[in-house]
Image (cartoon, rainbow, N blue to C red):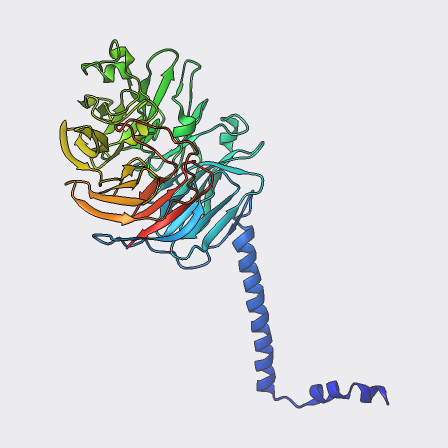
Length: 482
């Protein structure tokens, strides 16, 4: 058999006559296919590598998930997903990964990743979310390369990366609080030695403030971090109307609150806690007004006024105008709230109201007051046999309170109208993810709240996040109201 015969099949195929138009069509198809492959390769390379830097962004993988609709009178809550703790809700996404080197935007409805951002060897120390712009500001720690980044949540894109803050904050990265001013869009990185103002569009350093050895941000490391994407119920710094407000601890002094301009970092005003508490009656168990402390922290009352907690309980507050530092009103609750030392986080604020637990006739009730007007608004008794298992949470004109029986059974979510105190729903809940009952629960008086590990992390746009009370460990459940 000749060599020609061995290759005859190929010769037959290649020897077939092909018309000029068909030849051109074939060539064009081949060129087009190659172009598509090359384009996809370039797009994929750009999709991953253009945002590589110290990390890698994968996604978005689908259309942006819309926010979850909430019924007027919910009757049930469906567990949509169990996700890592320490996250926050934005639209139809849950952002998870605080305390790790991988941040994910998870579709709440499906549980699938919308995008994933990996930074091997780094740890996401803290974050906050500009909900208007849809941008996430994050502080990362990595030996020798601490930095702050801004991520466009919808686009899954790194907007800017600021490395120069590593020179201003000790390495490894000290705990920091991140706050975005809603007016100027300046991001404040509040650290133990410096506070740095970063431009919202470019990330460049606009100003920096050095804390003195005498006065430093008060306990910012554990409570100044924003876990729910809003401000914490009690933080030691807030960003409002073009002003950053920070509580300072100054030696043995009670403490003071300072407001500085978000655009320039210049001081606007300063007020001592003793001055803020001036004229308020001393509680029966302390000697003088000097025993008022700022341990209650700072809360955003209504977007225009700050509520400064004046004692360990935090129930007694001075309302401060953040633009001037002027005390607008003082609200003294006469000890009616069930706030014991170390339990100041039982109170929550929103739309001008203060909500927490108090006693009426020796029984625990859910209370709402207007501290600006100095009025008690309503009291809502606990359902028979149920006890509160978390601080109340305010979201979109509603108050949510997690309850259960004394034996930690029959978990229910009590939903109340914020303005009227009218009961809207009692929603049965699955046992919160990660819940572990204490082996030897203490026997407490009836007027002391029995906090369990089960807790409402947050309710944002109607999405309920419940789970273990550890801030960054374990898992949480995402519940959708129905």
